[in-house]
Image (tube, rainbow, N blue to C red):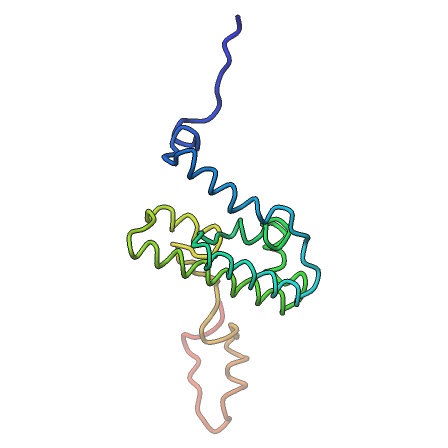
Length: 173
């Protein structure tokens, strides 16, 4: 009998690491699945209505709003919503998605500050969903702070003729 090799590690397995009981898992599935059959929003107005419906529902039920669930409520995928956020359907839709994600980011930030979610969970979500980064990017480009490099003759042409110029030792090499 051939031995079947398993891929990945147990640390990456949701099944091996999940502490939720069957009832909690059922509730989580129900909270997401209720948005599964939503038609994809077509207009900005429809998008606004659906976002309002989504956040109102989460508020009333006490369920945790997530980026993934929000995308289901909009009737599409995270990739599509990311493109909307980048402006593929214009600035109105882009700003709407950005503001909705700010609500989610704000909630995650408060949950971590109150020790209701692990810091590592917040860090992951902040980097992957909210555009945060823990690195500083510095662009280093060669440039002369005095402007373009000029030859001695070009500099001399810019100096008024009544100023004596001693060019000894400054000649171009």
